[in-house]
Length: 492
Ligand code: SF4
Image (cartoon, rainbow, N blue to C red; front, top):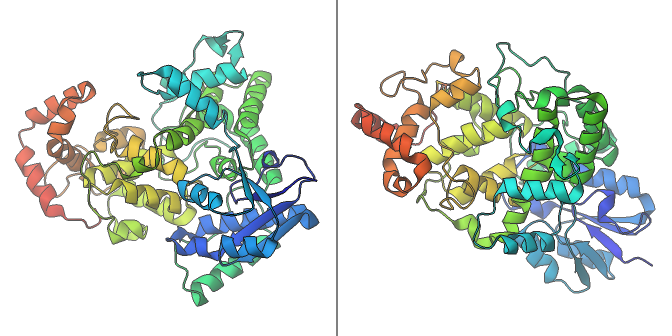
């Protein structure tokens, strides 16, 4: 008979089992939520998904609710096997246990072994996402026309960078929303009780569950996205509207990262749907790029770069996250962009990739927040966040703390970028064009302050030459620097 398979809460899809009848162990541990403050919505989603899976499996699953994993394993007894889990900490833990067989990880477009081979063959060349993505497309035959990319181009990014339309929200069908059931009600009661009686602390506010928690829900969400929203996805994927935080995004990162959907399956369905219904190719490609490109690239680099990578801090950023930021206190913030984005995180545990990178990440970079702390803040506060997702994305991409291993230049920008890509600035008490004085945009002033403070580290970077020249031409730089040194760490 099959060995019992221990499934973590991010390994819930059928592809984590060897056979459909394999016996399963599921563990719910309250201790996990004591290791740091999680967003209430994230805790809800994880527990809901786990309990729904247990209910679905019925007698085939032993479902243990315990303080710790160790207690749960002792209660279940007998040998179990587990697919390699998704963090360094969890990997160390499963290897320290008797009677646990650890198998290769699953749920990504190529295995860790295949990626290691790919990285080896690159030799001294940079491990570029674009090269990885093209090889994945060739390997799986995704969006291919024989040997060539479908439509003649591998990359349609240039067609997917429009600023927002002049309207409050996008003309697109609402996302698919799940209907909560008794399991969700039970989760909500338990989380209320943990917070009230057991001293477990959460961030953010509670509200109706927005993300798929079962395989069936995830497939429904996928179908709805493909038929009603994919066409619009690409054009505005980088744009932000104050009145429309979902835009045409798929909201599938959460069920994908719970392991409910397999990324290749998702990409294939997008391709099939796109071909059959003649969906705008740039939208289909942009979506496939996120699902089998960025997502898997991030995952593999997390392992490839090693556990120490998270502590890298090439720009010497040592500022602790201020309380208002850590607590998602959007009401304390006046800067309209940051206020809206922080409120989105507080209320939903989710904002799309551009507010993450160009508002929250940009802010942290300018203010010198400690990269590892910021990465932890991101994964605990986002419904789709995990250590593997946020370490490379935050430490490398957004904070440039790896000195350019992942991104060739820091994603620092002033208010002009935010103004171009959003409608936030119109309703803001600051002016994105102003650097000094009452109306000075904190992102614009912060951008010049950041460049001035890191002039030396950035001077060898050809992609920063233009920006540094701009810095040299600034007549009021002293005023900007003085103003920024006075600002302190309070909310802008
Ligand atoms: Fe944000 Fe500056 Fe625009 Fe205000 S003016 S919304 S602070 S970028």
